[in-house]
Length: 226
Image 1 (cartoon, rainbow, N blue to C red):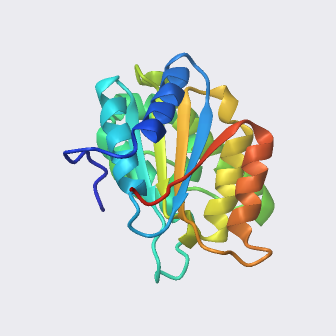
Image 2: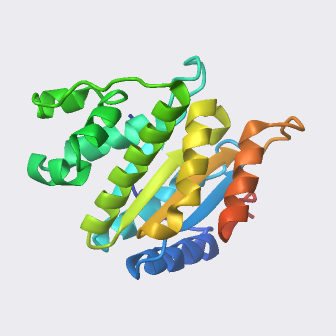
């Protein structure tokens, strides 16, 4: 998994970083916010968020990273599964079990992250009901777990979702669900995507537009450095 780490030196994106750090301060005060970073390939989106992540960790925030990847056939929920696995690796079992709450929540998440059964062999296997009911239960379970982690961390949670232009439809639907509830937790949601001309009905653009309708969202379009 690619790391999201600070590299020296950091120059040329000071104003964008200052805005994101201000949003991080809002998160520490208990407000959930979102920022979307777009730009051409290689323009510095990941580098900017790496610097933000370093500041976030220094302030006591939990940082979770998930990627969408090209050429994987649209792995369902791929960015969120990667972020949840990071949470699984970084959380002591007692804290994680408390965050998971009821057995039904844990079982729903274990449908996507089977490693939970390795940590908690007593988990009851998840059961599918109707597809729509199961999806709603799964979405709420994932968001509840992220929110529990956000509340448990001193500085809240920084969730970084990279390369959403490659995200599958299921991931975008979950992102939209998270956006509807974002105000409930100290969570800074950041996401990157390439600044390319999309098709008229591009699903990512529709989800980002809906996200912006749900609450104020910073949209940072990175330009080439002079």
